[in-house]
Image (tube, rainbow, N blue to C red; front, side, top):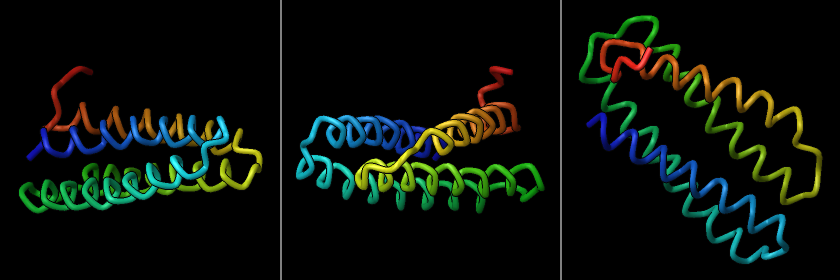
Length: 117
């Protein structure tokens, strides 16, 4: 199940970058299609994350990681929408980078992680 979760957020991250690139290059229709697929992957990320939480002993660190993961998904959506509307996203990118780094750290350092840290 861990591999399914990692695969879904990795694909979602790639789709996010593609959606932003398409939007910035003026291809709004392609960006909209990719954004809709990305939203499907948000659901898959949350579903696999809930299944992972269901299979372990719930501790505070895992709950914090889950909540921060939802924050990261929210930031990805806010960046995507604000880019589409032509508004500034600088602050959101900084918060996104910090939140994503923290979620990665928690994910890899907790018991179910790969112990990179």
